[in-house]
Amino acid sequence: MQKYGQHFLVNKGIINKIVDTAVENLDGTLIEIGPGQGALTLALIERGVQNFTIIEIDPVMVKKLKETLPDWAGVKIIEGNFLDLDLQFLDKEDKLNFVSNLPYIDAAQILLKVLELENFASATFMFQREQAQKLYALPESKHYGALSVLFQALAQSRPVCRVSPGSFNPPPKVESEVLFITPRPQKLFTNAAHYANFKETVKTCFSYRRKTVLNALVEKFKKDKTALAKILVSSGLKVSSRAEEVSAKNYVLLARNLEGFIF
Image (cartoon, rainbow, N blue to C red):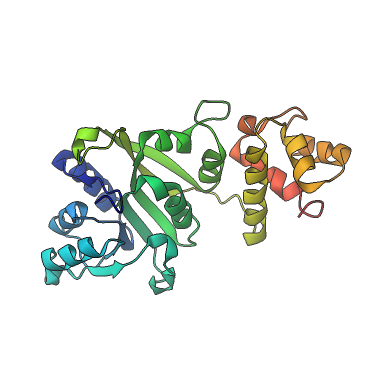
């Protein structure tokens, strides 16, 4: 438990809320990330879900799951770190749905890997509450940051429930929150290069948070300040705008307008 920092969900009411949300919106293939002792897995099977995939990093938990899960449910168990896995085994033609009590330490990386999948359809994910707040935070608010921008450019969310520390064994020191996540109705990126440029733009601007967006870009890319200022204005930004004041849509537009000048 200490090695992987697991906090096992034991609150039946919360388990049911997560499973209800995942099952009601299931359309295609289901993948559970980090099932641990199988609380969500068994609840999914009880709800009639079969032939889905679970990915677990802890070999001790994998052994326990193999002993616990009924063969007739057809659950495919993959041992490994989701972040390191090549997901080519997933059907590229099928819609992908995810469910997980995400490990706090890797939650953001796992989320982005899921959202970047071409056929991502939905995710019912539990986060540390402060991280969940970052996902739906608005510009200029306390929790708004690079993760907010990346998430909001790719997806949308709605709250499912908040989860107290006492819902876990052992209890964490923080509150958690479950979100139901789906792709944006309209994609904002024209191609893979545009998305890569967008990520680099966001990363740069938030890496120099004490500077304006303009000065951050000048510092990073050593380009003419006057020309950059014109691009910012044409992208809906002010010359004085700081990273935390710019919306995801404006970052997308900025990255597109920087093509051919920086990228």
